[in-house]
Length: 401
Ligand code: ARG
Image (tube, rainbow, N blue to C red; front, side, top):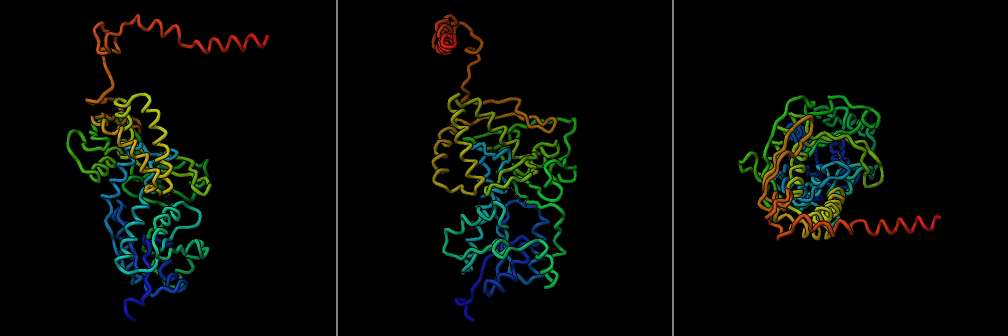
């Protein structure tokens, strides 16, 4: 058979049970002659690549690994500029999906594939995030687990019958998704919202103890650029802060999350670097932006976060929001000191040449920078303040009588 009539499909491949059973199913149920497994590096631990590699080899699967860590870190830093969080979750999984989907699409095109497949179920967010990218191509989009209504039990039986390599994969009792920006733990007894998780679910963070530590994060145009005065690249900064702040128990969250399809899920996350950088960034904005800009930016940030959660970071709305963000970030340059203390990453100092702050004005020295304003000038303002409210209350009172 010549290359041109071979039907091949690119599969988002992790080496876990779901994507492993997808390999024979794509040939048997969807009529593909060949499957290419693609694992995209967005900062997963080395053990996950070893698992994918081993499983691919045992399956005889052509396996590609694509490094997208830098690109992903850049997107995480765009998220920092937008103070992005969804219901208290800094969006690690959500932001990684479009990056992964794009990388797989690229491999699929290079390899002349006519299909794209993922192993996500029909209940979660990831199916939507992957397909939002893929359905913009003319390749066939396939979701075997969802379309064939597969259950965990069926997958286990099917794998056993076919002798598929699943023993190597350490599936564990939790469903875990890890990348540079966050580690998510779901499933098993955690599905009971009242269950208080034990320390064993945490891998990035130690239980907060009594020790404290301070770091200084430097920003330029809203992007984190240095740690303790030393310039540092995004991937390295994130890895370093995950390690350092994680040691002080920073960046744990235990939330009820509303998925896109409306299901509530109990989610546990670890995200030390994200917590440090988001807290530091917001502290610097508090210093350099006006009150109105801060208030309006909260709304912009909220909309950015919603699109980030949906995996739609390329939406025209996001571009428009980023126009506003870009304009404000030209002043978000300076440094913030963060103290790790009791599991928190608390801003304890901030400096910027763009600070909208005058110590003289705040402390009312006679000669100040506010253009000759004197204390007594506030008298007129004080007389007017609350005028309408006083009048309204009087009218309401009179009508009640
Ligand atoms: N709920 C999160 C999201 O949709 C993370 C899901 C991670 N998946 C997992 N199997 N732990 O972004």
